[in-house]
Image (cartoon, rainbow, N blue to C red; front, side, top):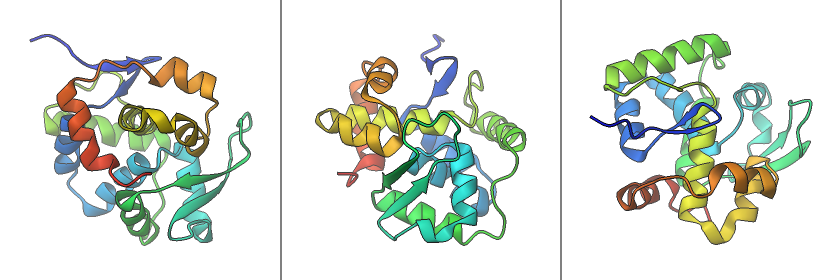
Length: 183
């Protein structure tokens, strides 16, 4: 069987069919909520940890994010959410505990991928962010600037890394289930 994984800078970008399998394989609802919050926002791992401590940054429609990244291009931004993102954030913010350490999360991701029968190569805490941005750009190519601003990237970075990824037509059609309503 050929390897049709997609990578950018060594980090795995998921196809929609893999996300469905992965979500089904996560055994605890609390961890599904955390995974979906990371996926449907495209936020960095540390930004999501920050949000848990600053719940008022979620307005019900967007997330007013103050970046914790030292070299952040945008120190402050609004993260756009579709209905999947709003639901995921509401559930995440009701969790009893914040995200675990990054190493703990990476171990969880690998374990869940194995349970789902997904190749684990390149999977890390960065995978959900890269997946979401690439899906949005594939679904809404005419809204690239809005996507890049919401994600916190420059158009140069986003065009270099997220355009022209080898998604099949089936992948692009299946992405719409997840990305619908973002614009």
